Structures are given as C-alpha cells and as structure tokens.
Length: 330
Image (cartoon, rainbow, N blue to C red; front, side):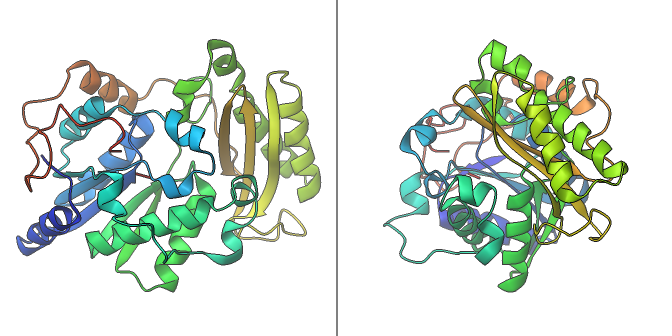
C-alpha cells in the first residue's frame, strides 16, 4: 500500500493502475475509520483490482469552526485498517493541497441539498459536492462507494455525477450498525457514556416509523410517530423526522406512491448531532450482533500499522505511521 499526499501523486497512481489493466474502486472518507468504512472498503476490494481510499477532513462542508476542530482524527489506525483490508493507494492530502487558494468555483446540487441536512447545516452540501467533484476529477474512471447511512449525501453525489457526466459509477452500501442498532459514525466517539446509551433512540424511531408505514399511515403521521419516539428520550433533541421519496427527497402524498420510500431522522445528544435513515418499507432491521467487519476492524487496529504500508509514493510527506493529525475527507 502506498500513501500519497499530492493531487499529482494520486492521479498518477490510479492512472498507472489502469494502465496495468486494473479497474479502480474509490472510497472517499474523512478518516476515523470504523467498521462501516471497512464494509465499503471490503466491497471495493472484492470488485476491483486496485482500491483507493481518500482521507481528508473537508473544511468546506463544516458550518462551525469548532465542529471542524473537534472532528475525530485517527491517522495511524486509519492506515492500519486500509493496509489490512488490501487497499492499494491512500490519498491523504493537506488542506493546502486540496485548496491551494480559497475556491471561487463550487458545486451546488439545487434543491436536493436544501432540505433536512441542508437546512440544518447551511452550505454543507455545497462543500460535499465540491470536494467529491474534485476527487472524482482526480481519480478518473472509477467506481465510488458510499454508505447509505448518509442518505441525502448519497442522493446528492449520484445526481451530481449524472448531471456532470462524470466517468464515475456511484454504488450504495448498507448501513452498518452497533449491537444496539445505532448506525456506526465517526461522531459516535464524541458521545458521553450516557448519551451513547441514549443514542439508540434513533434506531427505535426508525422502527416506529416503519411500523407506521406498514399500518398505512400517511407521511406526516409517520414523521410524527418518529418524532414522538425521539421525544421519549430525555437526552435527545430532535432536528427532523421525515418520510420521503428515496429518489428526490420530496415528501409524497402517500407512503405507497414512490417506488422507494426512505425514513430520515436527525437528533442531538449533548453536543453531538447524529443522523440515521432506513428503507421505509423494510425498516432498519432487527438488532444486529457484532459482525465480521467489526471483528476484522478490531484485529486491524489492535495489530498496529502493518509493515506493508509504504511511505509517501510521491515524496511529499512523512512515511505512514507519522501521518499528521488534521491532514485528514468526506
């Protein structure tokens, strides 16, 4: 595995992989890798000859400086996870490498980025779309893997890639959950023990919403049922709950109308904001047990940085194992 820190090094590494007959899988991340990320990487490794993982905490998608500063950064364990999974290239640029000067050109995906997360975090999806467009441009023809856990992001990225005729296929991967149903997220590490115990209320709210869908409730009643479930947890403060068309995030007249129905929920616990979603007709599923991805994750992190991790391929930074915190993508 090679760690590259420049745009030229990243583009060159993937071009070389294609020249040797390999197709490319891309997994964009903001680091602090957990079993959910590992599931994306495993999916890519199974399907492609060469897999690249980007690790970059993108400042454009944060609306509060303190949120950006507090975002978890675990560079050494991230590299260990990538190496153990069989990743070929890790792209870990600095902010100055990604944005040599303040960008005057950004990407905005219209009304898809306006409700829900867009309303709660103004400008968030402009930042997401801009950095993903840059990554897709650097990577070239490839298949990119995104988790369904950030469902609105998935919809935005898919539409952007289609509208701009990018040579990138976007593949959605299922949400990975903790044994109590909480969707795995890098932000979970910021929860206090009490808030972490309370956070499974999001999973319970989705279960409640799915039951309301099955009972034939209208979208507004489904959203109300989810909101009531979150309201039953004293430590949680609801941001939104909704039943939407999975294609365009619009609220349908009836839950039976759209081919794909998605339930969305977001809430704050202490100072941490969490989001979750599920298929509106099948629900979030039963409580999962510790899966193979989580076991492999623990083994990879526990083993430290494997010897197969190489230093920076393009000579623009320190070797793996000394990746500076804050050089962190999303």
